[in-house]
Image 1 (cartoon, helix red, strand yellow):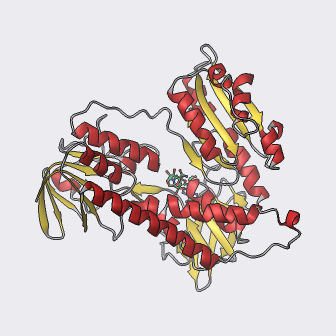
Image 2: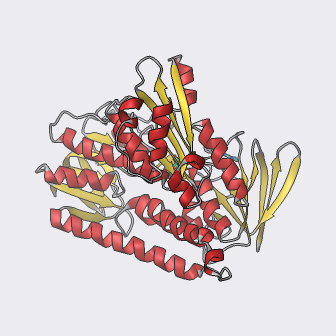
Image 3: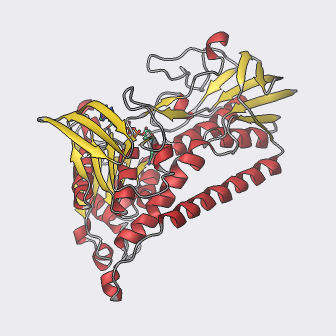
Length: 447
Ligand code: NAI
């Protein structure tokens, strides 16, 4: 078999790469080791977690007091079934898309045996260019290995058969916070242990503080600046020992380990063909996603940068265009990030801490949801919009939102930052009234 492009991995990096390469007239095969297309994002990541987050949020915030009813319970088995249906429906949409494009989909484990040859299911494929899009995997703790029942990664955490009475979450990053929210809303007693002094490292400190306050109000307990000393798994319970201001023993029915993910570079044959990794274990690439072997490209979680599905998709499209001979580059400045908690936390551009480090003069303003009529009408007034601009040019440098639907609101900032708009240019636009988006307008007009 001979192809122009072989894409390895069918996640949000790999499948757009395959589709774009095909649209550009290249003969494409896509190899996926799992039984289903879609990768981590569709099968055990973004999509299932957003389904659980959406319905548990409705459950937790439904104003039963207005309906004169007492609060019912949520059928967790039904919710899990709904989540599976969502995944299955999107899988079949993807399959249809692939069939329509006449892309050869091969299920099997791919191994690169030369710069122009890939082996899968015992067959050798000759190829001009290879795109590696194998993504990442959860990092395990040596003394608490995953059994995906009692000690779970995000994969097991999304597939629990029942709501545990208690859950310890190790790591207050995005995965830890999102899954903690799901189970806290379902009345699990959730305790988060975090090594650092703040949650969600890397986001603007105003969001870190605001989100921590909100999550505590929802009953989640936090041990920050806490080192995990040991973990012991017994039938029905797990005991962990932590060092905070003192030594503490904590017990729970389930432990979720969410201490980060690492690029999936194992068993691909990278070493034998001479693909170099960088010191953090990512595939080292140049600005055109080309590895140390010119015919082999890598994108998404495999290369250095934020592990975000939409970033992988941008890179997937870009690398296909590069292979097809187009001159393209990916613009990362306006890449948004979202934490799907309640309220949601979303960012675009630089954080205040990053700007301070550059020494660039800046101004910041905050518009609180308490002053936003729509937020008031729906009684969702916890949150804010923070806008940061260059103090000389007034060009927007960063927008940070803690609000319901921040995941949707942030796209306004994405466009404005991409277009290098000033705060007053954005603030003068006719935002609809009454909407939460007016908090962005207000923050822009105040800065
Ligand atoms: P993370 O890197 O976001 O957070 C891991 C946290 O664990 C850090 O705060 C770290 O200080 C802490 N930690 C590490 N070792 C520890 C220990 N021994 N004890 C206590 N705390 C410890 O990693 P996470 O949450 O696993 O997510 C992995 C990747 O997936 C991230 O890059 C994330 O951005 C991405 N992701 C993005 C989502 C989104 O955009 N909504 C959703 C889910 C994942």
